Length: 72
Image (tube, rainbow, N blue to C red; front, side):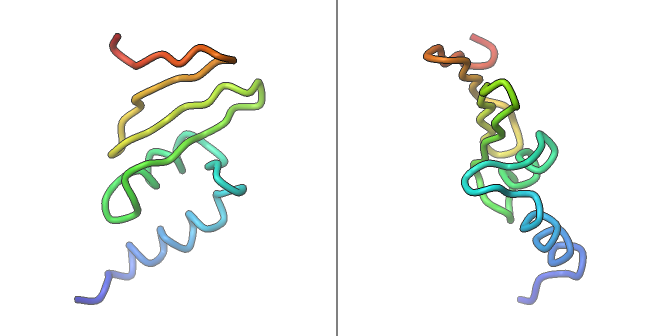
């Protein structure tokens, strides 16, 4: 089954929203971590904080050596 024009347009946009292994914004990471675009994505903030998304939801925040689960 062919993907819709909307899905293709989002895929094209997501390609412009990545720098290596990082998404360029929280928005791009959230979308990238949703089906059908993938299930995981990370955003690295300017201060080095890493936000890890799974299936459209923030799961972990890593600051320095400390990794904290959201809701823990």
